[in-house]
Image 1 (cartoon, chains in turn cyan, blue, orange):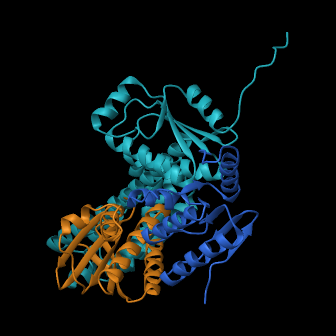
Image 2: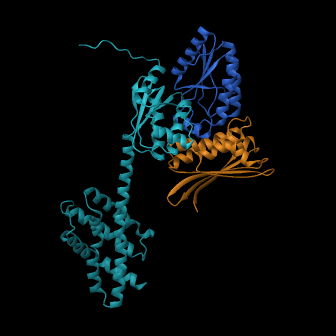
Image 3: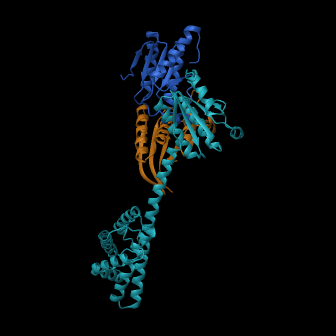
Length: 285
Length: 129
Length: 137
């Protein structure tokens, strides 16, 4: 296609000039963040991008999804990530790409005399740069999602600590609403802690759990069964009238499991079962 | 022929299963164990599966068989060292290993066996440990 | 429709083969990034079904496929034997571990350990059992 070659030629012939104009434009823009990025880094990012952009255009590929555009996208992904860390908003980072339009348009206007051809080439460039600008936003989004996922994991770990109450006795105070996924993770970690602490009894306290649905009740039961298979017993404490009713109505069978209303009661039973006892000495005056 | 070693620990026998068991090995183990229980007049058998990452229904049945045979020879069986992932899977599989007592490790398993024995001594019958 | 990224077949003719199948499944689940519990469930299910194929089906083979379904990856195992087949599928799927024959437990257990389960059996011709497990489910 003659037109493609024209665009590619125009850009590669004037790369340096485009680069100068583009960098200047970025620095003078309202979205420039001189506080976040230094000129030579900005210049380096722009130069690399322009080089790859020019190379990709000359492959005659219109579709930014095609493999020819991968090197460009790699550079953009790098820019997006490093700028996110530096504190740029996704729009500010996208402007990195969009601001390239102006210098290219001006160049095309100078080099292409035919108005129809000029319109066609400008449109092509606009579409390409729009897609690439949107790509930087996508990369930013994915990065944020990864951070959120990691934070959720950490929150889950923090919110379900297993504590050793006494020799051979561990307790897992559950707080908040349990969903199926969280319950599974929590139960697996309880079993690991039972092994780590060589616990004979694990008290699962659900005082801090507002409601229990079928899935959660079943997970609890499965955990109790698994603990038993491993050689430890479970006591469920924090049993309240509402939860007891829900469980019975759901038809879940908890008859095999010891349940207590309070953690204190459960602890007393656990001490007895592990052969420990509490004595009270006279209080020092 | 490959055999799983059986260790004598006081009046108990300890079997540590570390390899992926195939049928012949399982049969040989059951034979060896029953012979050793009689030979040493052992009162308890500890089966250590802390190295096993998979316990399927075949191994489960083998353990159940061992427990049954041991009981008839007046020895109690305690299964020790089950990994959490294995326990969770067995529950999902539906295996409950009835008639097999379990403990977290060999030490606790021995304590359990000692406890039962003590019960037997004093009262002449099984007492829950 | 899921794309098949990897496809291999292993024989199930001796009890040593069952051990090999377990190892193969373990390797594949690890490379797929399955968590430890997911790995254990899948390897155990494979062990059950391989044993069924051997003990009740007179031997057969297993096809192991790594699937890619849009954003998810999974492992599909197809156990095939040309044995006597299963007369009453419903019964076989319902049976627990109480019976000595042990056929039921393999099937219903494997079903619970996997995300997807399919079975085809023609008495006198053979049995085909397919289980699939997706990553992080």
